[in-house]
Length: 360
Ligand SMILES: *Cc1c(COP(=O)(O)O)cnc(C)c1O
Image 1 (cartoon, rainbow, N blue to C red):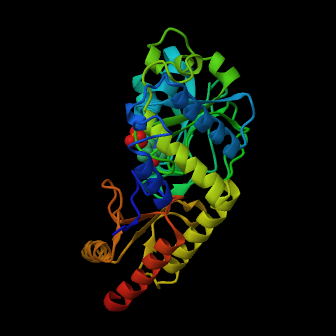
Image 2 (cartoon, rainbow, N blue to C red):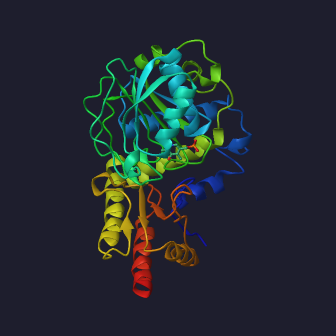
Image 3 (cartoon, rainbow, N blue to C red):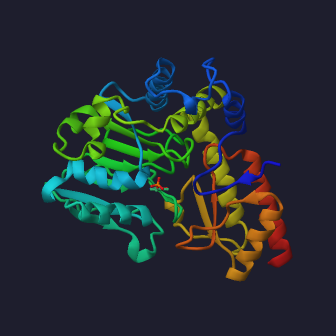
């Protein structure tokens, strides 16, 4: 039996995509073998990867100046690559700290020798909100932020307008979940395993003119130029992850109807769940400030940790898994990524009402 999967990541993938993967496993695209066994230099595989590249640009409405790169090493390697490429030798760069992943990115930039400083932070308030005032440096090479804070359940709804440098952002947990105006951004990245496909692939979107200004003479696999010059095939790319992501893009485009359609669904799912929390007379307490709430990761607490434990184990018995908060904060987190269907959210809400009746 398939469960309702609320995992924070790796996360739910649409059943229709998984069925297609299963069907194509022994003979992909008439090659008589699985895609895993094909050469990454084979024409069929190169065509497949190019299609994924095109579909991402099309879905996001990116102009020609944007390049799509396929990297590995997760979103975590991007923390180092961004700093090494765009703030070498102590060059100044600004970070906005809104949670675990931006903290990691900031510390990694410093480790890589970047002149990283904090332009804003919500750490003093347990990362419960997205800052709206910034202390930018004038000479900064870029301003870094995390679009959706997977752990704390906060999300940027409008990005900083007065930044003195292009924005670089980690979109790992809300990539392709809503329409975004990318005009203030120079580089955007996302690990695939939250909202796109299997782990092992990281999508990087970068403006070509920004990339050309990047540092030279860094190790090949850490240098974005390498990925651009070799069409992300300098070494063996994660072919299977690219392929499954391609099927997810196809599903998003043709079954769902694109970004506007998925955004509407995502907004409705989140609104229903937050309403259930807010209408519970304090039994369920959202942890993020209301103006900063995430559409992707809904974080909340119950009156005691004992009740949270019971909640999680009962939910699991009812076929709802992955509802535990990130191990660094505890509590409950329902991740409502693109592939989590409305029915899953409806089932969770009725479970929450029942649970409160018995324990409230
Ligand atoms: C999951 C996540 C990461 C870490 O991704 P890895 O692929 O495991 O390195 C980084 N940033 C955000 C916002 C995430 O949600």
